[in-house]
Amino acid sequence: MLGRFLCNEYNDCRVTSLGLDSANDTICDIANNKPALSVRFDTVIHAAGSTCHENAMEVNLNGTINLCEALSNNPPQQFVFISSVQVYGIDSREDIDESTPANPTTLYGKSKLQAEQYLAQWCNSHNVTLSILRPALIMGTGMKGTLLSMVKGISDGYYFHIKGNDARRSIVHALDVAKAARLIAPIGGTFNLTDNTHPTVHDLAESIALRIGGKRIYTLPRWCVNIAAKIGDIMGDKAPLSSKKLQQITNTLTFNSDAISKVIDWTPVNVSEYLRNHQYTDSDI
Image: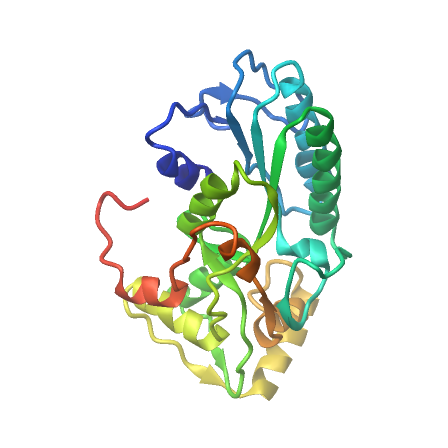
């Protein structure tokens, strides 16, 4: 998902893309194979990843190892790894910064943290400047996970506001993740990425609704939503709502990303305002 934004950010450079799709310059499943890389790159940005429980370790950790081994004979000057705030393993808290100990609770979070740790050793031994970016929820074309579920729910009419829900969530636009990757690459370090506004779930949903055609979102009382979540637990993963999904939209979870703005000139867009006010054209990603 992030690849197209990164290629657009580096459109004034010679870019070699690597991935599963036939549109890439190098086609390889790095989870199971080492890519054939004969060129020495100035900068490598590793944004490949999987949030799926079944293959998170294979893609996120093994894929990172395979990529690095393919680069070992011609290591780059700079390496940027797109990690995740899930390495902290926290479901509900405010203003979590980079000093917070990483203690992931999901396989996805664990695989990202182990990849970070491997990269720290590999980059140190190969004299490569390493930057680790930990984005919050990423908004942008091709997004997945919680945000995609919200968009689908709003579009199809089964997403509802919950009365009295003032939970906030950190978010960042893919455009700004790409910008941060380029700016931080020669510097290095580990940084959270957010848009610094932490919108309420209500406001974010309304912004998405406006972006996809002014969809109307109705409000339900909490007791009604609780019952629907319990029914969803019985139905399984395909249910539009479950106790886990309910927790995601009713718990406040925000991250502090002040640190990176002290190192580079990076001012991210307000995602909610961008969705409401940006005049989209055919040239938009």
